[in-house]
Amino acid sequence: MFLGLEWYWWLVIVAALIIIIPLKVKFMKWWGRRERDRKKEQRGKWGDEE
Image (cartoon, rainbow, N blue to C red):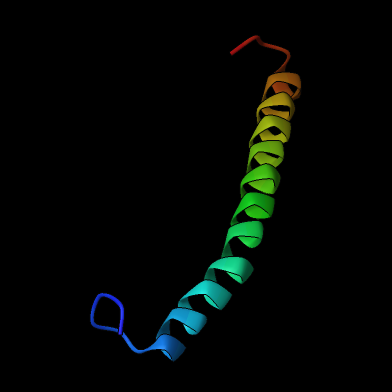
């Protein structure tokens, strides 16, 4: 036991991190691109520079 958890729980935690971290990075890149495109669209829509 390490920090009160059995060894198989550590495997579950590591597997979850291996899956979740790349998905989060991909999501953050997609979200940033979406926000940037949305701002461009708003600016060009009415012709003002807000």
